[in-house]
Each structure stands twice: as structure tokens, then as C-alpha cells.
Length: 341
Image (cartoon, rainbow, N blue to C red; front, side):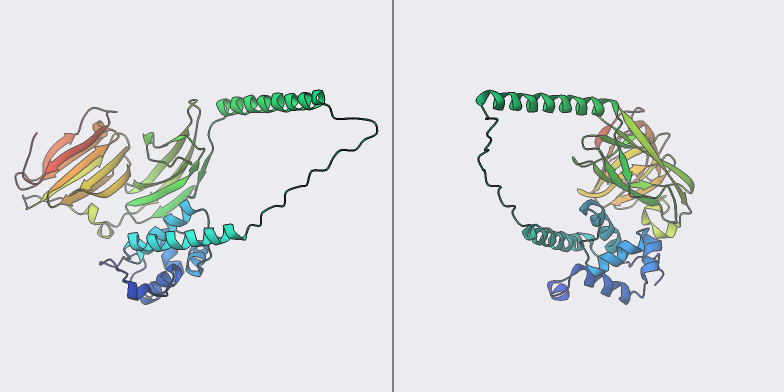
């Protein structure tokens, strides 16, 4: 099969199939079945080849932190047509076993034995002990205040896993990295989700041509820093069902076509109660979503989120924006048999 083509059906893993097989063996075996090389996988997923080699070797010692490795395993298994939820469960179990084993290797340090201080010239009195403790306390307070002042004056750090410039033929790119703990993260000024430890990973929908993606971190003191990634996209529509042409006639279900603009928006989509999309849409990017019964839309900016609706009642109706510019909205519901303009 083509390196950039994904298997149409998810590869379900039964207990008999993975009995005795580890994650790296499952991935390696599936890749060879599809007659794909590691270079093919690197081009289609944009995961560097050295990380693919480590994953297939099961080398958790040299793999990066869990937040990055989990993303690599998810993208790799998705490219091979696996059910990513199953593969991530296997990954989590193996990673936990590795971390537990590594922790057990640490030897407890021996406690230093206390020996009396013998001196013919000096003696340690309660007054001296009090002076030493007071000095330590004052020094600790000075260091703490200095650290707080440095936090107020310094912008948060940003570490990105992506290169400064890249290219793709897909309709999206995964932007991931870490910022200082407690800092908020924005992509093109649209807020995204991040973990309490500062790690983040966001799917960003692209437009054909040059896409400028600005990642901003802002701490609680209002200080911020930014880094920009340029993604050159030559999108192949056939690779993404969400880019197919919207329906022009009513059908037994519900379909919404989303367009972002003039600002970037963070979108969450639930189809028939299940999460099907969560990520950032750059201005001008489009996505098509279908469900049997209902679709719920949550957006960080209703004024930059436009909808075209098709269901049992109407076909291709341009509803327009979902609200005012800058206004966040949650759980906007579209059913298969209702239409409110």
C-alpha cells in the first residue's frame, strides 16, 4: 500500500493476537505486513525515524518523556490502521511496568551517623544554634522572594517538539510541547487545552499553502512569549473524509460543515454523544462532520465559527456564525430532524 495511505478498517487486537507480543512487536509486525519502511512512516507521520526505531525496539530508556512518546505511539498506530485506544492501553501498561522497575533499582541512601563535635577551643551552645537557624531562615526567605521576583519579570519558557518549518499533504498538523507549569497556551491567539504540568498537544487544521502557526504561553503575571512554526500544506482531499463535499439534498442523519474565520478557533465536536474532534482550526480551514442523530459544537469564538447544515429537514442551509466575535459557546445542538434559524 502507499506510504501515505491508511488502512480503511481499524485493526482490532484480540487477546490471542497480542498474547506474548509487546507493543513494539505488534507495530513492527503490522508495518511489515503493510510492506512499509520506517522511512515511509517518517514521511507520513512526521515522526523522526530515530524515535520510530526506539519504539520498535521497545527502548523506553531512550524514548522522550511520556507526553511525547504517547503522541508518537498514537500517530504511529493510527497510520498502521490500529485501534489507537487499544494500542495506548498496551503502551501505558508497558510504560508503567518500566517506570516501576526503574524505580525499584534505586538503592536507599544510608543515613549519616551523628558524631559528637569535639573541640578544645569552641563549644556549640543554644545561642549559636539559634543564630545559625535564624540565618538559614533569612537566607531562605531572601532566595524565595528573589525567585518570586524573577517569575514576575520573566516570560514563560516554550519548548516545541515541532520543527520551525515543515511541510505536509494532510489537512492537519499536531503541535505539541511544554511551557512553564501554570501558564496558559494559545495557538494563533486562540486558547487550547494544556496539562497542569505545562505539556500540551493540539491538532491544528490547515489551509492549502503557507500556514503560520504562532504558539503563545502566558503566565499568571501577564508575561508572555511566543514561537512561530511555518507549515507548507499541499492538502490531498482524498486522504481526509472530513474534507469531502457537503451534501446538497436532505438525508437520514445530520451533517454540519464548519468554516473558521476571521480568527482561529478551538473546536470540540461530539457526534451522537461521542467526542470526534478536538483541536484548533486556522482561519479559512474547513471540516465536515456527520452523525446519525445529533452533533454538539463547542467553540472558543462563536463569531469565527460558521455552519452549513444538512439533515432530514433542510439541505445545505448556511446558518452563518454561531454568535458574536470573541464569544465562547458550549454544546450548540443540531439534530437530524430539527432546524431553528
